[in-house]
Length: 526
Image (cartoon, rainbow, N blue to C red):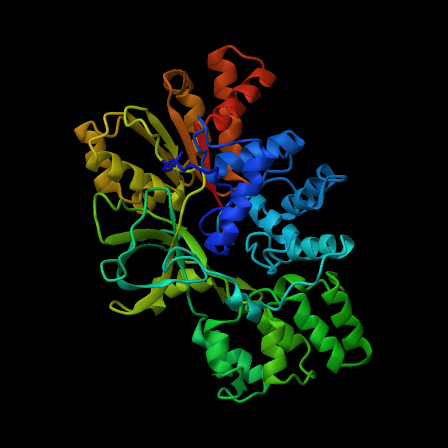
């Protein structure tokens, strides 16, 4: 786990949570008392360790804390639990930190009234937001404050939380894919020397991006409004560029449309606001699509902006080491581009980094501290890293950090992608690490070079050696897709333990669970 500086008080509330120092101190003290801890002879645990302890104390370890589990199943497991636990089950379970918390502490903050913004769980999207709203209404909790009031919430240090970003200088981008690749992946670098930010490998980097101007202008055209219309002290175009999410149309927008339309349009808008899909086209209804569908609706610019969700920062795994390259930070970014019907869609931050931001421009950024994802405290501990595609990013950082600190522990990287000829990211430097002996094992898997081979297949092929590393104290890491890749890798790990450790399926599952509990199995999933 990421090394934490011992504190005389148990730290449950993370530093990035939007509380004042006085509020955070009181809340930490409250939870310390709840756990019957005092300062005498007690070493404070990390925030993630305390969160895990609290979850187990209340309900045997939050069985819904699985990002691959459907929302309905998670909610069923939390039935009959206190409101904070029900809210916890409604979250996306990725502990990504994009909300400024982890899932458990965000839920607790909402339940206590300390956090009034209910829409911060970006991976959970509208499904999580609807579930959270329903739980709060059923519990008789006060309505959430509008997004505009969030500025009154106490914020953390500059560059250390989403509410108070620093300005970093964009340096460069270079494409990592070769000719023939079906992907578009970029190595992106920023200069941190002016803003003074530092980081630890395993941390994430928050990018406060802007919407694509082409999409903004199309929205304004369909809205039939003036780009310079006043919207709370900014022009409409400025608000849509920097402040408003233009992805999936929020329920509030459909609610607004229902107020200014009639007949069948009103009925459809009401059903969409309730989460239904009356015409089977919900997957195409981003903000622009919603305006096109309800072309007769006449919305004022100010009311329209108020109905939209705030534009969320995007978090990326850091692929560099501050120790190896102080003052610089790098990311490994897949540009998200796809089409729904005849309309192209673009990822907000990924295409901002891939094409729109120019070298020398200042970008609002922040460092999101890792929660239970980082190098072992003991540099002699072996590490096994599984990172297909852009999932290699934090492990490139791990390797650069271990080399810079001369950590003697062995290193094993599993990397996979589609084609070796065009999708082997960082091939030269990884091969050089392998040739020098620093990277003990470099195990590769290619899914489009003839037979489909994935990382989990290579794990099973090397199962005996993998088991020996685990028995020798190795830490095991995954970075990648939460719902598919991570579950497949975990299943392969369980199979390896069962086959080469001579354990039953139940015993192998318990072995892997014990690794996770001990901090020896860590995941950075999205």
